[in-house]
Image 1 (tube, rainbow, N blue to C red):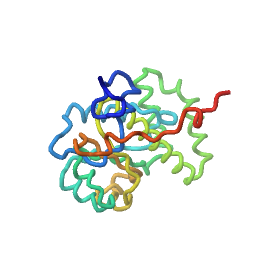
Image 2: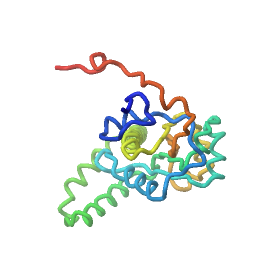
Image 3: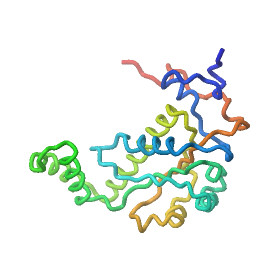
Length: 221
């Protein structure tokens, strides 16, 4: 039978199996690649993430160009998963977020939900008022939180799709911005996540997860 501790062979029957299978990959198989269909599913999963008000104040850069990935290795403190991966997902905050962005959001809502724009005016003004009372630092902090919310969503989504990943804060965001020319795109790098197929000799894959007992981490009231 299958061993729940040998993550290479867990049957993927439900989300808990997928989360048990998932780990932060230390070595990808650079001879194996995800398919174009899988990459498309990753993009769609990203777009379906929850975000505050549904505003999505971020973008995801999908880096598949081998030369660019190689340039990003030094900006990732030498972590080879960057170049070994099929694609590097870079999560970036939008620096162009403001009232115009909110107006566009409601125009999109009007079209997609077939609701006259004037019927959405009250909700739009409420949302604008919420952000008008925030400082630039507060809006930045809010935006970054949305990126981390999305990253968590992506880790679970990728596990469910049986796509390997490694979330990385250990990068130089300013170097990423320069290499990927993100300032011109009105974006700032927050975190990175190479995705691909785990190498069969990555010993970390079969290591037991170190998690607290439920009684230590859950409070029942």
